[in-house]
Length: 151
Image (cartoon, rainbow, N blue to C red; front, side, top):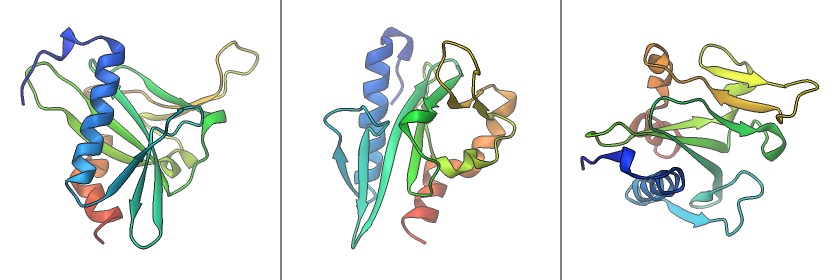
């Protein structure tokens, strides 16, 4: 699949990232359940029998932009995942699954911002850059599927 991702607006690319991630998870034999209202920082839930569940927040980026999740909408736990989908024109999307517990000790591209006395809400973020992409390697979708769901 190769396309001109820059033709899609912000909402379209975000929705595509959600569907793309769900499709990849379902193809691994996992169930996904969509949240009707995304007011808790959960786009969908993954279920693996018999009773394992993961909350997933999907973020996308076209130009290695800064992506973030608000601290008041999540907790740093092993069963909470950030699904990151990177889009580059002419290329298939790159997918990553990052446990939110990774932000317990922020470093490198993994940042924690509190914005004391500022208008912005505190957030956990990814300061994406070409140079910093190597820090995402352990979280590539296929590697994380093998680690989390097929140990």
